[in-house]
Image 1 (spheres, rainbow, N blue to C red):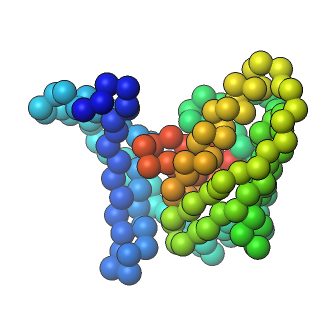
Image 2 (image 1 turned 135 degrees about the vertical axis):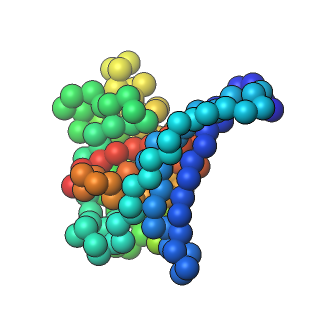
Length: 163
């Protein structure tokens, strides 16, 4: 086991057609050195299909409300838009970005991204770094119970955004 990595448990349930139906909406940390451990109850949320909630990726613009459970700076205007042509674009709160994305059911791949390089105040620069690191590692998406878009990485990091 590598000591500089974070290990987590996630759970997903897919239907007979392979489409994701249920998923945990948070990562449950585990200690890989322990033989047994109790992570408590894994809570799953239903994954809405693209049409079920009225929200889907193509053509929708989202305002980011949370970057990996650390929030966002008030009025920093972090956004992400998924174009119907397979382009993703938006604002980090300081710089703008654009790139490509592919979506297949609940699977989502983003990047590489091109960005402007304006100087940011330190707090916005740090937020931008966290946002881009998560965005480029996204591997899945779903709409949560509150109607928000959740973009999730394979290791449990996330972005949460509202229409």
